Image 1 (tube, rainbow, N blue to C red):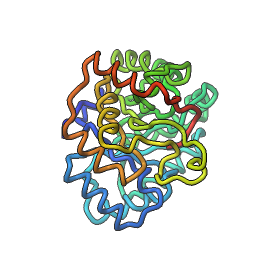
Image 2: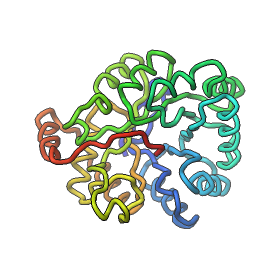
Image 3: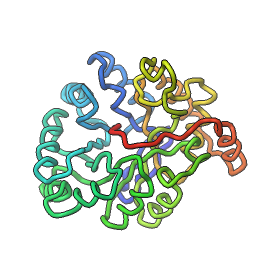
Length: 288
């Protein structure tokens, strides 16, 4: 699988990242199979959060038996120093690791939250102390508000940023989802960029909003051709990697598309966007 430099971390990340939200409520046997599948297909980077159900527990079990073998990015949704310290230490213990390669402020989607996390007594104080103690190497920020993250990169020297980037959002840029200014700032500051929601189509509608077949809070594209178009669009932007969606059933199609990846030219990108103008972009903060 193709690998790209994750900004100033210098890590060469696979263009797909193991999205551990997919392990939210599976059995250990299924989690083990997903990890083995990822390794066999050249994935070398894992994203996880303590909010992802059983994911940390399943990863910890596998790491204990097999070694870490991946670049490991974890997160905290805590905003205070005390809360972030407790979250970080708990995740290290559950994951059975001595340190994180990347530790991220998770789900930062409004300026008040950002200022709290970066301010006196905020989560960043704990993260910086943990870095000084060797418990983590790099620091990132995640969420669903690229314009806010653009501000964040100017307030703190983050190593990475993670946010939604897909062709539906590109077809309907708003004050909430416009990612282009953020990509420019990230390039200028050599910040590694990771995309989520690459195969998102729209929010669940009708009866499917109450009961749907996938472990995703949005309706994904689930046909091979549409998945490939969506992934190609996202990976054709100025990013490092795309995080795999939270539904294991979709992973074989995602992996197949990534193996065949070729960047879209400008005309092809416009065509990919024109094919999804009937869908409305996702909106609102989420913790996945």
